[in-house]
Length: 106
Image 1 (cartoon, rainbow, N blue to C red):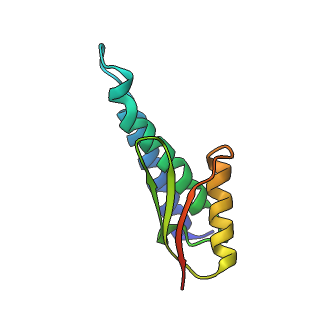
Image 2 (image 1 turned 45 degrees about the horizontal axis):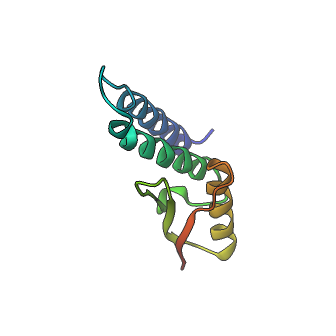
Image 3 (image 1 turned 180 degrees about the vertical axis):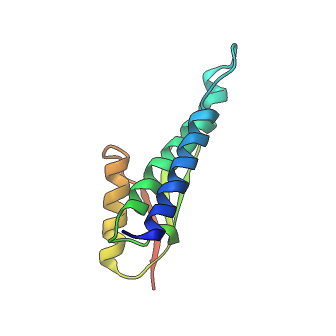
């Protein structure tokens, strides 16, 4: 049992709770008002997939989502294999959509 994994899962739960609460619309709010919640939900889903994998350093990989929902992975990875796996995990979390690769191998 990994203590740091437990801490990560706790943060993941907190992020998901925050996302769920952010998605609660007051009466009369439009879909446009929900765009940030949708973006946060996409970001959380991809980040959760990265953090859940032992094959990538998910904490060192940034996940950005623009207003159209395009996901960009950035930051540093230790190898081409880690880059490939991070992109695969993101693609899987996105239901097959291709993330933008801005990762750098150190």
